[in-house]
Amino acid sequence: MKIAVFGLGYVGVVNLACLSHLGHEMWGCDIKSQKVDSVKAGRSPIFEPRVAEMLEEALNKGLLFASSDAMEVVSKTDMALICVGTPSRSDGTVNLDFALNTASEIARCLKALNKSYDVVFRSTIPPGTVENSFIPVFKKELGHDFSRVNISFLPEFLREGSAVKDFFQCSRIVIGCNSGEPAALKEVFGYSADIPLVFTDLRTAEFVKYVDNAFHAAKIAFVNEAYSVGSAYDVDIETANRIFLMDKHLNVAETYLRPGLPFGGSCLPKDMRAITHLADKANVEVPVLRSILESNMKGLRNLVTR
Image (cartoon, rainbow, N blue to C red; front, top):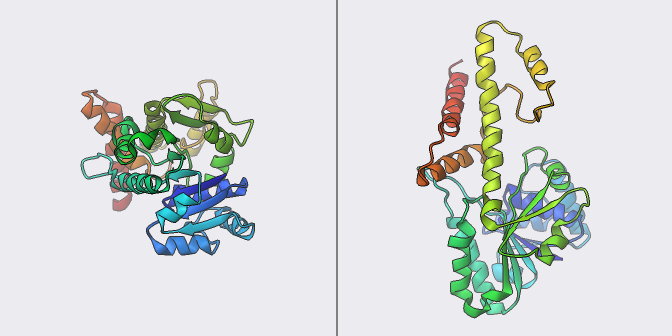
C-alpha cells in the first residue's frame, strides 16, 4: 500500500521505517525541510537503533519518498498516518494545534483531489478528540464527500531505544474506529499472526495510551520512592529489588520497575498532566495520579542538589 506519514518526529520516522521494511511505499511529509531532505536521502532525522538502516534499505528499493508539499503526498498515497506533536500547555491541556492544522491541510487536499482516503491519527490525544475536533474539520471541508474518508485512531506504544522491537513485537495493536473493521488497516497493521488486532471505539483507543503511560509513570515513581525509604535504613537496594521482582504471580513485569533516575522525556510528564487535567474536567479525584508528578519532581530536585 502507499502510505503517507505526516510529522517526521520520533513516532513518524519509526512508522516510516518499519512500514517500508514491510514492503509498503512510504511518503514522509513535514514542514521542516531538513527532515524531508534527510528522509529523501535515506538518512534518519532521529537516532534509534535499526531505523537508519531500514530507511536506507527502503530508499534503495524505491519505497521511500518525502516532500513538504501535502498535496503531492496525499495525491500519491491511499492512507495518511498523522504523527505530529501534541505537547502540553502550561495548564496541562493538550495542544492540538499541529494536529488540527495537519487535518485541515489533508482535508483541503482531499477536496481538491476528489478521492477516497484513510486518515489514521497516531498522535496521543484525549478521549473524544477525533470525534469532537478532527472529524468536524473533515466534515466542514468535504461536506457530502466526507463519506469517502475513513478516520481511525491507533495509539502507539513505542519506547525510545527499543522502538523497532516494540513495533514488530508488541503485545497488541489497538485500532479505534467508528464502525466495523477497516480492511485497509487490517492489511497494513495485521502484519503478524502473533499480534492481536484489537478493534474498539475511538474514545477507548484514545484513552488506553494514557492508561499505559500513567501506569509506567506510577511504577517508576513507586520504586524510586519505596527504595529511598529502604536506603535511609541501609537496605541492600539491589538485593531487595531482585527479591521483589521474583514474584511473577501478581503480574509484576520488570519494565520500569528498577530504581533509578526520575522519569522524563516527551511522553510520561505530558500524559500525566493530561490525565489529571481530564480528571479535573470530569470532577474525578485522583490523589495517587496527582502525586506522581510531585514525587517525580522531588526526585529531580534531589538529583540536582546531590
